[in-house]
Image (cartoon, rainbow, N blue to C red; front, side, top):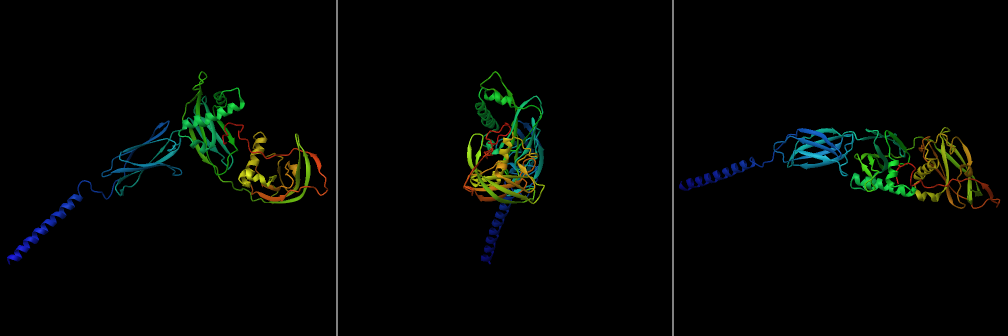
Length: 430
């Protein structure tokens, strides 16, 4: 009995100690530092643009009980492009424009924030903010694979300003907007001034600055390429050669991407090489032995106006062996030879209906013995290729069957690369 009573007391003591430990551990888990099972969504109390140069957006929210930190994201509202994201232990965040945080004028952004504690996250709270209009409103219209209408409307019609479009990598090569303006834009005018002589670069820049509402239609874009349309206000100090140009507005930017080229007409072409003739082409300055083929073109649609070119196949290498790229550049080169006009509505270079024509009539010829080709494609009145390109290869002859060569006075077209310095300073592609 005594042994049993002693054993019972010992068992009671052990159970009491164990129970106390369990209670103690339970109390520790419910005390300070415990992880909550849920969190309230933060209440956003501020969502605004606080500065427009550089663009600065400010957001703040009320504290959430038991939250350790807050996770936030800023995206463009229209396409959900991510602009900035992060976490903070504070109750506010300020997002400032930089080359890595590309905030744009007159654009709506969506801000989201949620409370976080360990693996527990609250529901997301959302707010939107729209940035202010810039000192120069830029709009882009009628965008195609090679062209766009660019419009500028300054708030002050007396302000001088610059605007242009460039491949976007020329901008992203610089660390800041001001570095881009001083490096690329000033550099452009310094090179320009050297080419004409007699003027300082800032004098050329002032002469080519704009005032008031402006619009310009570019035709030198490439398909599926990222560009930047930009503008900024300037003043010129005529008494300083050290600091002659003052940038008086932020750099206003509109990034854009050209669409892929697509045929807009299902017209096809039957192309036949009927004959070839070796001639002595007597040009203005030189006489050259060339081959003028006779070509017959039959379109499936008599109403489609089309362009015909006759070239050596070796010319493709200059354009990445891409016949479409070659065609784009042929049209651009012809436009530049025509004073930069992209109006093809009355061009004698375009044909319609079934036609039989010689290379001399087209002002195209190839060298004897060369692997050559005929290219035919539809072209709109504004210089857009509308059909798939029909290509027919042929081998140029080396001599006529008669053994004689006739000398003919003619002015042949030579495919030159588009000018690396366009006539208008808005076109800064190269």
